[in-house]
Length: 111
Length: 117
Image (cartoon, rainbow over all chains, first blue to last red; front, side, top):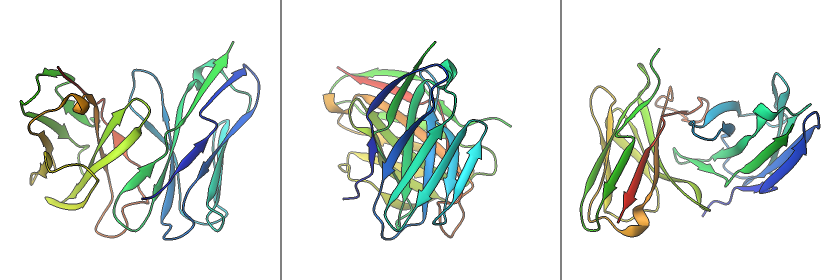
């Protein structure tokens, strides 16, 4: 059974704070690591797809890094805004045509 | 471009009944995946289809089945419903091809909320 762990489970920050979360995944049979943002009453939305060790991706104030050798990825949000409040999910792509999701990090940004 | 469409949005069924959920992927997407989301469990993989073939199946009982049609639309069926099947069922499509299915992001529908009483 694949284990994809995300930490912390939840996080409360103030508007303007920078924050980061962690996704841990198996370091073998790695194909890709995905990050999604899931806002309340909406469907999950893809942020990044990373496939190479050392990958760094950026989208506005959000960025992500990937270390496949040690099996972790970090998601960073710079200068958090209330509209960043959402659950952030990572998903590991292994060798069997499926993505295994973590349980997510629930971010609340207080104005 | 239309997004992933799931119907119905809400369903209420009683134990023992069966249910069929539908998913229309984004035009041009041939891969369709289904996930179950329950509180505290996160998104659990049900199955993935590509060109009418199931390529992988999650750890769910045989009561959960699916299929994909030649136009890439997919259906999921749950027979003999149990209370524990109450969940949000999400469908996602992607541009994944015959090789690795991981380079393309998933595009999710709004889900079907199933309540079993």
